[in-house]
Amino acid sequence: MNQSKVCVMLSTYNGAKYIEEQLESLLAQRHVEMDIYIRDDGSSDETVQKVRKYAKSFSDQIKIYLFEGENLGVIGSFFELMRLTQLKYDFYAFCDQDDVWKSDKLSRAVEQLQSRPSKIPLMYCSSTQMVDQELNPLNMWPQLPPKPLSMCNALVENCCVGCTMVLNSVTFEHLRMNLPSDHKSIIMHDWWIYLVVASFGEVIFDKEPMILYRQHQGNVLGGSNDKLFTKWKNRWNRFMNGKNHFILSKQASAFFEIYKDQLSTQQQEDIQHFLYQRDRSLHNRISYALNMPFYRQASLDNLVLKLIYVMKKV
Image 1 (cartoon, rainbow, N blue to C red):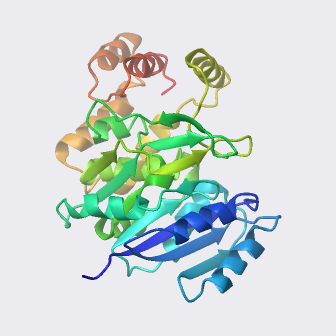
Image 2 (image 1 turned 90 degrees about the vertical axis):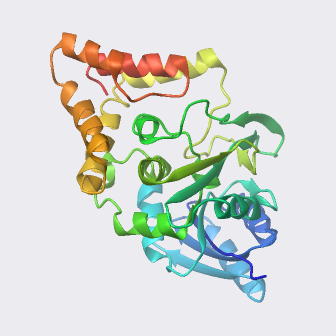
């Protein structure tokens, strides 16, 4: 039986400290045929040299395509990587530079994706085992979402960690044809992908953590191991400083602009109402916030969503 062909897309930036561990875990993947596409986002350390060394040393085992580019930031780099990737694979996976994958991460994702209809957009994602710099376990994050992974969730919350995502070819080609040209309205590449798949296909969430998700001061992004009070204090401070103002409506507008002709009538109306009601009177905003179809997974997060909507900061 032929093994599935999987493309792993890895964006690097000054990741020399941990890149070898990640590459080792990719080389250890079982029961799949894999190529690795790496785009370096303007590193100034030895990341590129280490990648080249691996590409040469393991050329008989795996094919590594390396692209060096200017610094675009994490969103721009991953979108550019998607443009550079060839359309010849069965599945496409995203990868960060400083994690460690379990050896059956890809085969488990492929198995679950193959159990669903192949002609619709599908995405697999999983929980992660968060670890410290020495790979000592911390906690598991995120937990299995209790509510449906639908457009009404994805428009206002991201439940899927990018480095756990594996897409079928239908999803990848659909995304690649419709990549946003302006990244300023995009909150994060994985959130955008979750929104697209939740709107047009199906998201498979695996509660079994399939990667060791390293937490350290150099993390560009990632899950938080903070205690609840600290997490909410930091979130509130970011909100008061204006860092999170309007990010949901900006991304929703960008999504609607690209996909409006492909959305169902109900989806179009839901997004239009979300964007329209925020500029109406306080009474209208309160009424809409209390009854909106959009939701976050946790009750407290859902309450905050309604609050920032009423405050016109969504």
